[in-house]
Length: 87
Image (cartoon, rainbow, N blue to C red; front, side):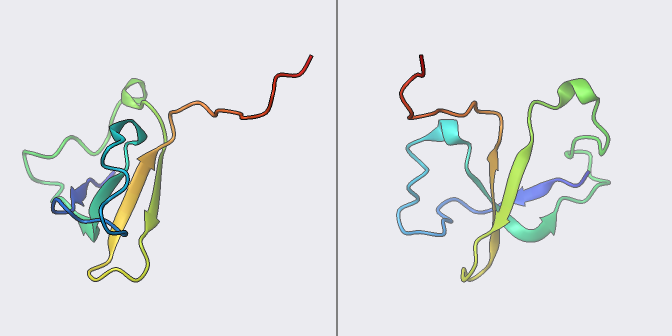
């Protein structure tokens, strides 16, 4: 496992970072194709116990950004349906 390096504050694919007021969405931005040095003492171990894994993470690339960066969000939230309940 390699740990991504966070992007500097203020980085967002759209002006004003619409995700900032909603920390529960856990949208984060990271330097593109940059990882912490695995030998650094500040980096968590490369192998984690399965009990430490809380959820999956979705990662995508924000196209057209200069410089490019990765954008992530967690997948631990439960789906919400807007359909009326069925009898």
